[in-house]
Image (cartoon, rainbow, N blue to C red; front, top):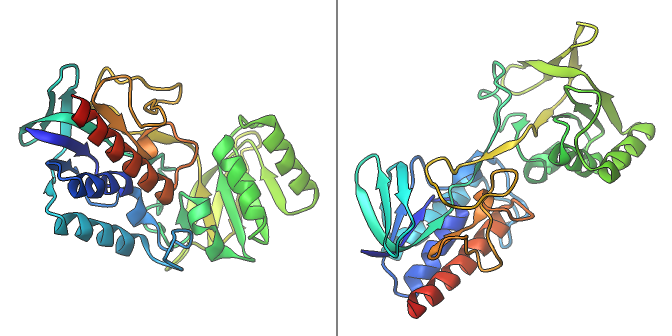
Length: 304
């Protein structure tokens, strides 16, 4: 019987483990792939305190070494199902079954890829899924964003202060983002900083060692053209990793609903990081969620 099973070994899960182990709790961390989650895909991180510049693999490895040194039990197994209804939480993986008094879900959310040839080849070499993480690497250069929702519009505004020109590519004529934000981008277009490429899709990614240009297809005219850019930021949506559980309340976008103590609608079940409905999806806020979640779990265990 564990005090807590942490599902997911990203920044939020690892921070939760650190705080729980320091509180003397028996903890099991389950991770289906590699420690760090989406962090390891980031080449350069410049907004995490104490690190002027650090790559994602280095930061994730440092966090992982810390939880290992604390004696945290870690198993690389994929969670298949969870029975969270009772006082004892049962977590089944592809290799075994585990029981705990509490569960902390930090499985993250996966960006939706374009599924275009060479996409994986150019990750961290011009392809990015996080403008706030990697935008500064392309200061004064021409970049592109694909998407039409709030994230892509916010990314466009952010990159307009960094890049020379920002091409905003959207498969429709009308954006789905908030009108206030859209109007800001329209003002940037009038100023010549942003260029709209509407009713269009990215169908090709070109370059040798790094991304050098993208191929765009207009669905109305059927014309295809190439645009020279140093980076393409993909913001066509994220999918929270919650498919293995039932009973946990989700918001309209599929994220786990939590209160300010990171408690879900199920007693003894907590969540944080990108899988939860927080306002900001950043490493530092994921760590904050983990610390708050751990504190809430310690209190819950004391009361029950």
